[in-house]
Image (cartoon, rainbow, N blue to C red; front, top):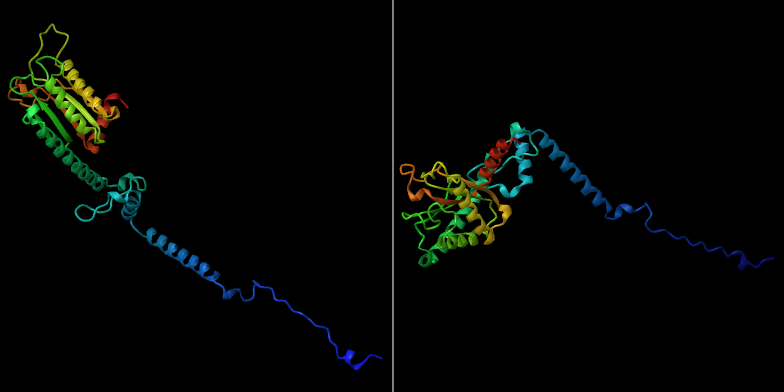
Length: 277
């Protein structure tokens, strides 16, 4: 027979609980992530519902803001411009964006004009050209004109496309200033109304074009990129500066235009129509 002590012995059972079981998981922080996702989804849903109920012009304006937020201003003109890529052409009004861009470019051209005037003033003793170089910001853009004086040979000798030393110095100074900018450049040559003989094969058209090209070469040599020069024109006597005196020396001039962006687009459009593009 077994002893009473042995009869009282019982097996020892060890119970191990596994961590990370589904029970008690709600005590962790994972529910917060799920709740945040839910709230974000609901916010996006209500935002979409709000946008769907807006009129088309407001939708276009909001799209324009996210497409180019730097073009928007506060006060004055409308502060939101339409996005031409997100709205039908019939609903897009490009005027606010064009006005903002024009104002920005005008400010840039005014600063460039003032810097160029200072450079000319600093070199006045050597050049003496204050009254012969006209710098203005017009409705077309920044225009710089080298206008002949009464003698008519300051920049080019009469009937010649060989630039004078004074003209070379003036264009060198102008080119150094324009090289700091990025705007497109159009160079125009103008003559007075005096004509070559009827037998001549060289006319004011060739003369004005050759003078414009002479100016272009100096500007490019001073750092104005070739890619920026979008036009070299010989306009002969078609745009007289002093129409009441067609033979006046002031009609003979070189004009350098840095056009506003919208003006440049118009010039390109006219060129395309001429070429049949």
